[in-house]
Amino acid sequence: MWNWLKTLYHRLGSPKWFYQITGKWLPWFVAASLVLLTTGLVMGLAYAPMDYQQGNSFRIMYIHVPAAFLAQSVYMMMAAAGVVMLVWKIKMADVVAQALAPVGAAMTFISLVTGAIWGMPTWGTWWMWDARLTSMLILFFLYLGVIALREALSPQEVAAKACALLAIVGVINIPIIKYSVDWWYTLHQPASIKLTEKPAMPASMYLPLLFMVLGFYALLGWSVLLRARAEVLRREAKSGWVRELLKDK
Amino acid sequence: MNLVKKTNAAAFCRLTPKKVNSPSLMAVFIAACRREWQLQVRRKGDLINPLVFFALVVVLFPLGVSPTAEILAPVAPGVLWVAALLAVLMSLDALFRPDLQDGSLEQLLVCGYPAAPLSLAKVLVHWLLSCVPLVLLAPLLGVMLYLPFQAQGVLMLSLLLGSLTLSLVGAIGAALTTGLGKSGVLMTLLVLPFYMPVLIFGTGAMQAAIGGHTALAHLALLGALALVALVLSPWAIAAALRIAVSGE
Image 1: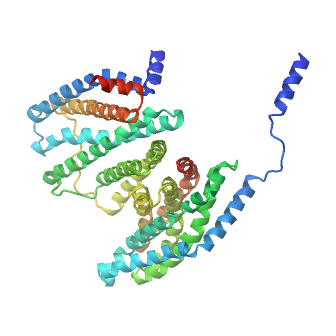
Image 2 (image 1 turned 180 degrees about the horizontal axis):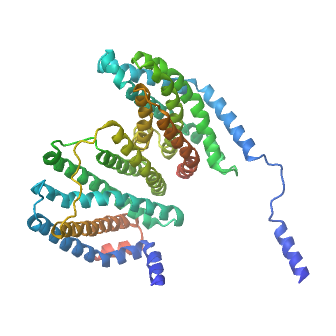
Image 3 (image 1 turned 90 degrees about the vertical axis):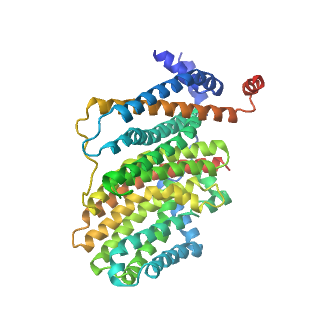
């Protein structure tokens, strides 16, 4: 098992193998995300019981919570890929990091927008300077910074290393930012309306959420692999195997 | 056997470095500080412009919001801090670029001494020369914004501690964007999210002082942030400088 993982890890480091192996994985991710998202959405939107306080508006949770989950974990993945890139100089890690950044930014944006839509019926306002909202907004800006840095730096290797470093610095800073924003919130604002604390959710409410989270992860795998494969083809456009591959089509 | 060992030792002897009286790291650090001091003192424009920028941004607020004391006094801590933060950011933009252009940055990286302490020397001298004047200017602008008198000391102290963190963290962004011709907006985009904790604790200290409480907790946190930045950011700055130089 360990050896199998090790060879897989080394194979994934080569562009050609990466392209071939992920090509086999892709249908599984597609199938998993389609099945999980459909069951999750149908169960969540149609069959889950209504919340006794928020009525039907709580159902946006089935989009909001998975997106917020991914928004945070994608940044961690990006930094992990950055460490792999800087330590072992594996270029494929940079391809994955490059593919992760826009997806993470999109997830953060989705969680902010759905949060605002959810906020209107429950809090009575689109936006509140709540600690969680604020740190999410800062996370969004961190993503935009990484994307902008990659756009600006010209040789690919330099952009790769710089983005990896920025992602790592960001991961060290995220707990500090989160802590300070929490401190600021308790300092400046009286605890006004809060999200109703999660009461022990019934399984009919909780299961769809679980499906949606897993489905979002599968969707992340799908979209990141698609982006990474396209980027591999773009970077390796001059190599022999890509030419052969494109000749067939 | 013994003979083999001896020849082996002889073979390796040539590889051991010849003893030369190379100066200690501390001496090199001090020399780097002196060089940096002289260079920055001679570029007077780069030292004065951030101060003028600071004053100008502060002047915009009475014009834009309201000149009355009832409105200006409550927002004074935030205005002063935001203006100071932006001024520090602006002043950092040209920290490494001249060195990259004249090649001395490469010399810093290949000279055989660790790059982190040497880049720390640059940032520290920069902090002394452009942030300390900012701290001295701040109370004057505070008076113009009707900042209560009891908050003036905390303003200076919090700016002094906070600007060290701002300089160190901002230098990472400056190093990352050194290779670009003009990087003002990009660097702002990269660095500002990391500045938010400093802003929160800095204004928090002043709010506490205005409210008649002790600002010690906030100042302690600002000091903690400065110490963490002092320990960690030189390594990030050095790594970023290596990346920037390799891209040239």
